[in-house]
Image 1 (spheres, one colour):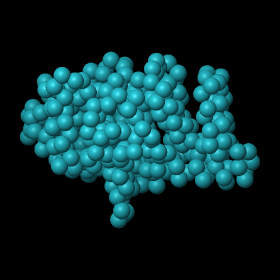
Image 2 (tube, rainbow, N blue to C red):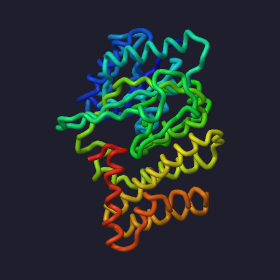
Image 3 (tube, rainbow, N blue to C red):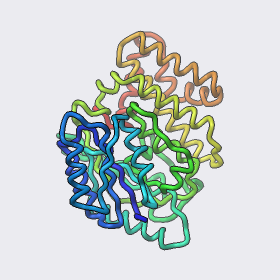
Image 4 (cartoon, rainbow, N blue to C red):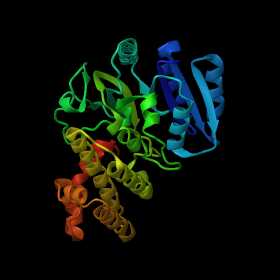
Amino acid sequence: MKLLSIAIPCYNSAAYMRNCIESLLPGGDEVEILIVNDGSTKDNTAEIADEYEARYPGICRAIHQENGGHGEAVNAGLRAATGIYFKVVDSDDWVNKEAYMEVLETLRMFVRGQQTLDMLITNFVYEKQGAKHKRVMQYKTALPRRQLSTWKDVKVFMLGQYILMHSVIYRTEMLRDCGLELPKHTFYVDNIFVFQPLPYVKTFYYLDVNFYRYFIGREDQSVNEKVMIGRIDQQLRVTRLMLNCYHNSKISSSKLRHYMVRYLEIMMTVSSILAIKSGTEENMQKKYELWQELRRQDLPLYLRLRWGFLGQTMNLPGKSGRTISIAGYKISQKFFGFN
């Protein structure tokens, strides 16, 4: 059994996937690198995956499947994983070697010991193309450092400070136990990946190192603003799935419940701001329908989100109201890191 399984969803990723894979190879035999070729047709992604499997048998595995989207590539990696822990690294991202070694040592410590670790949290760095200053998402204000913790130990999450897919390594069996299966042909499912398992997380550990390097800046990237507006239906679908997940979950910790509500607040903000910025009445109607569905499904949650600061900002009437709503744009920018 491996210590850590790392899934790399790849779709026409030949231009940059080698950098990602090479950054993960220093993990050695304790790590399996699952290179998931998600039906690539425009380049030699499949050949590169096979090349690494041949060069590093027992470490790299090539998985080929029909195109199912980012979520289905993550699903394929999770199905194939033999590691005690599971991580997703996107094919245009990479990891820092020194922090990687600390991550592996921390996981070893828990595997050898008597305590069970459900979630390891690290920092990640926005590697924004052309930016001189690299912004770091870290959690010093919110989480105890270098100690096994539970939700009762959580301090204060600042606005815009969220645990994202780049931050987490989950215990593999826990992901399977919570029934995680991401929808096919849908972008932005990384939010579901990190949100759905949270009620199953009993213990976590915050390792304050800048491990994950999140590249951002390509025009075709899923978090590019214009791309997000064009895919607003997928953003809405993910938001609805997360609302359903929250509605159906048994959440025992008040601090976890507060955190999950705050997460849903930012998802509703992003969905609303994309509709507003699109400038179409069709998308404004979709925004209205999303809020009304929430009202019917869970009135207390609707009231909490609708009359919170962000909810009020997103629902001001008329053109002047929409202008004010754009002020919430910076918050969603910080959350997603889009352009």
